[in-house]
Image (cartoon, rainbow, N blue to C red; front, side, top):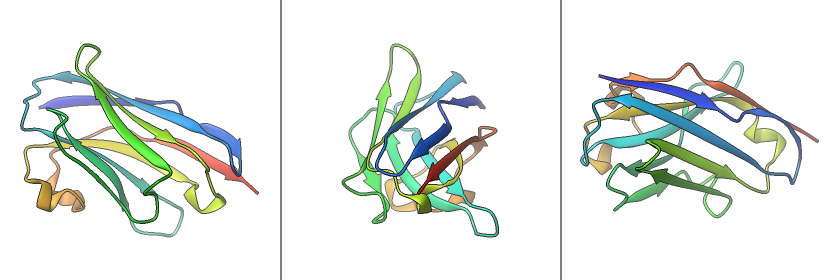
Length: 125
């Protein structure tokens, strides 16, 4: 089991940037996939980005491609999500997740085993 704690959320104006961080503790494996999901009020949870813990593969939702970048720091045991050119529609609670899954399943929330508590991101227009 992996414990995950997110940080870095907040309020930002449209066009601005935020950097989210997910600190992982417990057992992690090079084959683990770390993902970011988001959920806006009244909407379903949505995949944002994922990275294999080894760093060899990344995957992004079309809605964030070119604006968001996922990365991991093995020394710090963190997975970060750099969010640039933020839009009001990016407003949501962002959660990180971890699991032992193939990259073909990264967009599927139930494929992940462990979740953080989430951090609020609000983008004002």
